Length: 155
Image 1 (cartoon, rainbow, N blue to C red):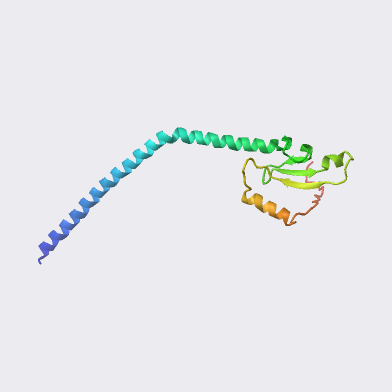
Image 2 (spheres, rainbow, N blue to C red):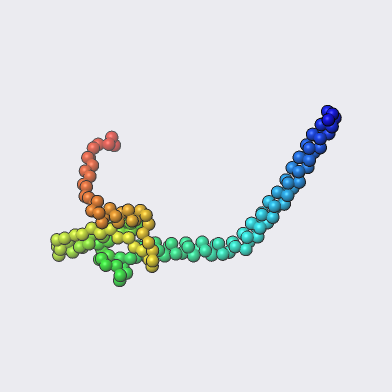
């Protein structure tokens, strides 16, 4: 085989590579364009449904938050509303059960109850379960923190 034949073969191979590159690049462009068109069509078809779903989820979340804060005033809430303090996060309420009676000198016992309000078949989150476990296992304590009244350099 002569060098000129080798040059012709290499040249033909390189031309073939270039042609294959442009052919597949054009095919990929067509596929990408179809995908863009499909995405735009999907957006047009589903935007209203997505918005409706988003509004419904937002409404549901808002109703849940309102229900949580209104819970002490509902008949199924087992404590006096005056004894409940809304926290919201990580649990909904701390209830000082019996506090109102004790404050009015009609009782001498107060129980502290952590309350999480769920609507329907709502389930506790992981963090809520951790708090529930700490309470049920007795890992609850009291601490009084005293802050010294120092002159902070204010005139």
